[in-house]
Length: 141
Image (cartoon, rainbow, N blue to C red; front, side):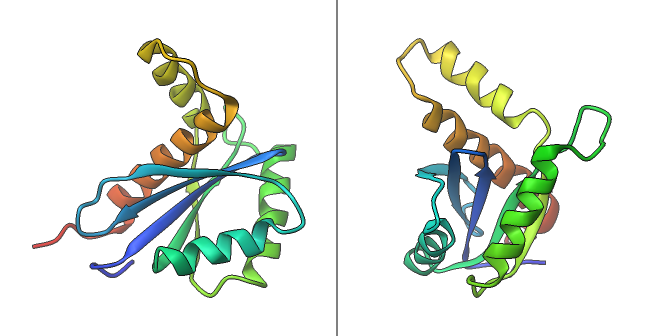
């Protein structure tokens, strides 16, 4: 369980980019923060965002196949999280990310405005964070 009165980050980890979202546990409103290009510096960039936003936890989208099976992306995400655990100073949680990227792309298309792939990743991270908040963070009394 994550304590109230803090912020939480969420990550949508892909091969080329990492979508990042943030939310306050009080307001419980997730919003896209940024999209990072994957590099050897990514874990340090994420730690910098944790520090900047005083995040108390990070929810990482956990990709699986349509039948719940592990995929190559599942293994890649698990490997990235192992690397991230060596650097970050807050708890990391896996959060199911079933179809969040498709949902994000559909929403962006419905807006009728131009968008780039990074916008999809950051919005997908927002959906991951919304799910995490619903499942793991108590609503303020």
